[in-house]
Image 1 (cartoon, rainbow, N blue to C red):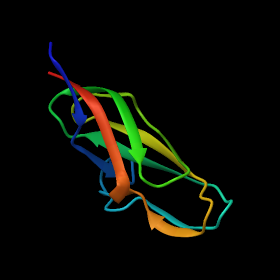
Image 2: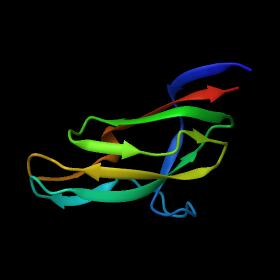
Image 3: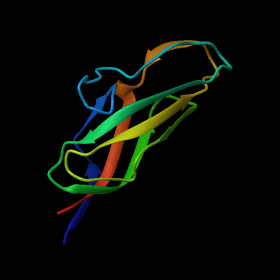
Length: 104
């Protein structure tokens, strides 16, 4: 069994059924010092099990937690908490990087 760690193909959805693909994870307008939480869903688009999944973003003050393992086509919840130190109106998907180890 071989393993390869890399950015993997995944899709983000607004619901657990995977019906509405997200182009942007819209956190809305956030004032400095406020905390906003949102749950989105990620689907493994690879034909392999992905494990040791990590979530990162260029945006500061963001905490992201999600499933550590996903089988092919499996959907799991990703919880996002953003507590910016400046006022922002932004989405996160364009700066979100998801990596994992593909087990082939």
